[in-house]
Length: 186
Image (cartoon, rainbow, N blue to C red):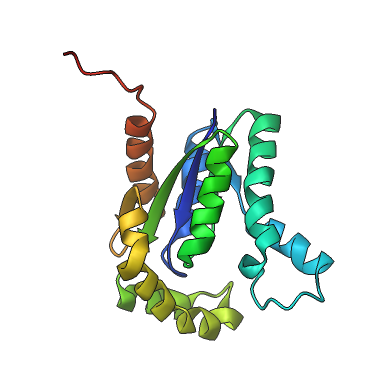
């Protein structure tokens, strides 16, 4: 059984940088970006009426299967990076991953709203998407308050910390999650 650590959170929180630090520091883990499943579906289902590939039921069904195939092929655990704000979508993904026999831990990477806005505005790589990313911050905060914060196994605030420090926090949590359950003595 492989372990899948799903890194979720708003744009600008440092999900990708943190996940990269995590996999760079531990050869047992491989980065998995479910967005590529979405890109494939968007290309093949261009006529489907879905503005976001996450709205495609096939994305939510295929992502756990692709994750499973990668773990089976490589023998590695996965660090998956994808913002999922729709609780129904998350439930489908998590049920699909667990049905494949994997343990799943949801890590929420977040930062203060001011920090997120600054990072998004200053991002030189994704500067063309800044407006779109900023428009989706209220969606994140609504999901955070509604269900996402409670669903997370770990919440890491990156307002004042580096991706390396955030990855260290996740590694520490992984060590605890990986400990075998020892039954209590009666």
